[in-house]
Length: 294
Ligand SMILES: C[S@@+](CC[C@H](N)C(=O)[O-])C[C@H]1O[C@@H](n2cnc3c(N)ncnc32)[C@H](O)[C@@H]1O
Image (cartoon, rainbow, N blue to C red; front, side):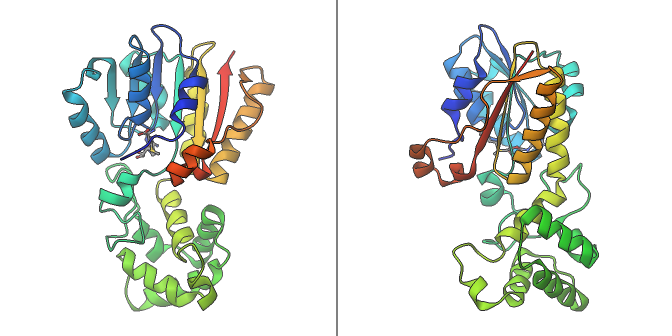
């Protein structure tokens, strides 16, 4: 079963008032949204989901639910937040971002998010609006660009070896499936690296996904727009899973607090409780930050 990360903390820190309007900027299966709607019978939610397959699944699942009349979902990127709230005439009192990839991407998307399955090396959250696939990046980027991606987005220490392997392999034939990339990585790294606890392809796959979807730019755009559109007294919660995302959020919150636009609800970061991490290992690296619009 899918578990929403830090649901209790999301509900607590959103500080929801009667008849509040809340935006779930990363709807997915609607776990957080549903938790909020069930607890607050007069709250309305606008959900944003970029992935067309996940969006369709959500729409079908919610259709016959009694919650359906209190939630509207749109299939867009949260970077379009301003346009979306104008179109939907939805002025938010709270916004939640739960960043990154979901279990659905790994388990059912067929788009190559995981090295555990042999699928086309795609990794686009939204194939209609993103033109470059992971295979495009792997087969066409310069060695320097590939190294930057692996270093910056994957913190992959063996990036020189892996990039060398990719360049050699793609001279013979393009790398188009996940299994081909995994094989290249396994053949490029030394034995000790292949036998570590994490799979040697983990960081390369993460880095490619972030690059394909332009995830760090999106986070910056989305969070800045969210601060702009929030009602005074409204709360913004961001849950991130990657150090770079967390850093972007921290910097934005710091600047906006200095400018007197937001105030920090808590000084640093809220981490999931150990009971949650025990039940849901994905929660392990979650970091939650919260501000309130002044
Ligand atoms: C970790 S999941 C969210 C899980 C959700 N909070 C829940 O409780 O079910 C992140 C979701 O954000 C979506 N996403 C990623 N980038 C996005 C973007 N730029 N705009 C909107 N949704 C995005 C992903 O497709 C994924 O479904």
